[in-house]
Amino acid sequence: MPPLPVLLDFDPGHDDAIALLLALASPEVELLGLTTTYGNQTLEKTTANAIRVLELVGRDDVPVAAGAAAPLERELEVAAHVHGESGLDGPALPAARGAPLSDDAIDFMVARVDASEQPVTIVATGPLTNVARFLSVHRGEGLARIVVMGGSIGEGNMTPAAEFNIWADPEAAQRVFSSGLDVTMIGLESSASEGSARVARMSLAELQTSVLEDPSLGSEGQRVLAWTRANMTRRGRWLARLRGRPTRSRTTKGTCSGCSSRTRISCSTTAPI
Image (cartoon, rainbow, N blue to C red):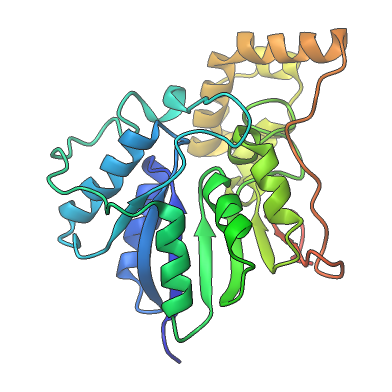
């Protein structure tokens, strides 16, 4: 079987950097190129991070095209509180020597999809602004499907209900999920271990009184609990707002594979539908 042609639309970020390394190492994937978006940090920083990771592993032959610097309609907010000022805080990577293509990410995506002999899969691991812009100028012909890392069927990580990638640009997510294309959503629950899932189910009072050294949570659960307790004040403000007044949702509803949008949901708590 020939390798799967993939366009990776992402916002590196530690998790996206690992996704890129896995794609580069997989004989099952033909990586057609990278498109970058704001998200874990600003577009300038995520684009530089993509190039830094490619240069680290000697794969600067993979083209990088910069895309959206902000959501379609909302103000820009980035996840510096998670990924640091550089977007890749922690490892000491050299500064990027190369530069992205002069082409805008959308023009690059259109050209790569149209030139591919096989249907292309778009894997989006950041906010969906680039994908929504692509679909506004391209009807999706030549696409196999769109795979989205984002959303949640339970609790969120930015508000009690909203996951960051969808929260960052819900209007873009709405366009993608209602496009009528084959969309696979890999939600926040997919990355939850038993320990971290238990933390996600705890009430505010339980979080305040839980013991960090509880061995039954496991090391990952303890880390999640430590992070959650460090953000208690922030979550308390969310809950106070929710109790005090109605809030506008920044998430959108998806539908299953039996409906017109053919959206599939994959998570650790439910079987794919």
